[in-house]
View 1 (cartoon, rainbow, N blue to C red):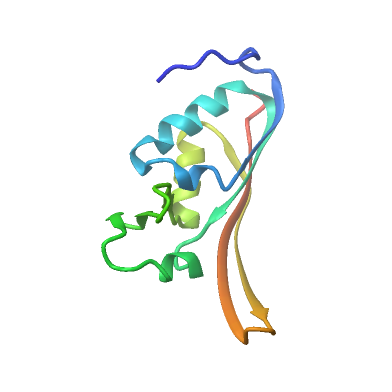
View 2: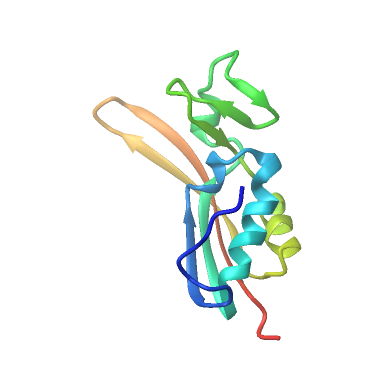
Length: 132
């Protein structure tokens, strides 16, 4: 699908992708990142954060919700993919971007009232479009 954007190519300093890529079919992710990279100025950055592999949300899915490896359908019909640092790095580098940061953010969240421990995993990255 081609969408006309209200900005020209090579015009954006920063693009944020926060919990967006996980909602896209894994087969379409490379195309999406390549399209976004076209809009970055040389020296511009992509800021990325999304679900990491084995996040609590992934581990809680019931049988029958898995569409393909690490790709699930939620009860409301929305989709979610759980990625790895390596997958994200490949997507962004294949689109011509350079890694500035690519980390796994693992956090233990505790709900004291319900006495629940929740192990969360997110991938957080920063990639840059080369100057030349």
